[in-house]
Image (cartoon, rainbow, N blue to C red; front, side, top):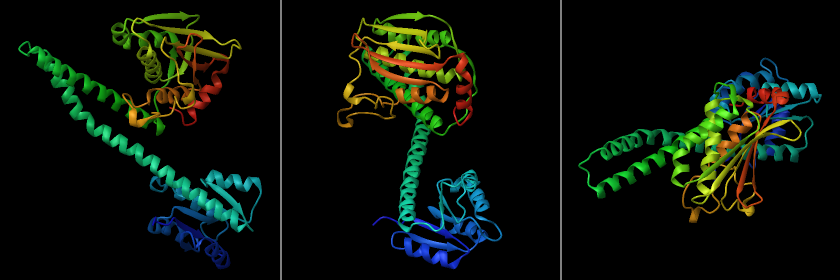
Length: 368
């Protein structure tokens, strides 16, 4: 049997407490506090998942209790539902500004209150699991970094040993390639974790031509190994307000994807242009591969979006997800489609100069 969700009821009216206990006691583990000071103590000792918080109380009122709870990072997942006899929109907005998740007015419908508490109990559990997975991935990837650096470093040194037999040289080369592959995946998982946590990165004016040129250089070895022809069509050299390293990674991920799925001797087209409505600058990559599976539409940009884990061969399915996170954090958009000749077409779109204010505002509001 699962652990019951803990609900802390905070109200200075004993009658209101009895009503709430009657509504919630069958499904939830309850504790009560008759004032703000006791509520703050109970948040630490009882550890509630949800706080039902009366707004009007003597001493510390509900809004101040809410603010103080939100100051503690260890309480960030607690869901706070304000309960008040005040129903004006201004009063509701004050509650949300204080950090409340929801607001319910007295007299309330018992079934509605029960439904809200159940919804927030599920939401809290989902958020905690998601954060746990992110933290676990970060821990594992950090711990793996040191041994992988040793594997890559020592195998690279061994390859420089002229006394190594050809058979052992091939084995060492396999070790080196496997180490580099794992190191690359770890770097991408760490980046995904950082972006999910909204870590901040310095921004500047980034020019599209520099991004395209550098992306080709960084993927040059893959391009040469498959004898891929890259055709670049540039109408103008436009600027993007963002972090150069992140935007460079986004374009590299798309280039790697295009080269990977193109056949040996195939081609990749890179087009850079202003949209017909003059509102967006566009960078578009089209490969000569089989294109996207239309049955998987909408899943291409989901992290770890592997369609069939039982028959999965290679890759974690996070490169396109990373691209989407990076581009959207700088006011852009990314889309996937199939070209007229069958290849995959990936399109990055950024607001043009006359739409830049909107992108800047988006980047400042919790973006990277």
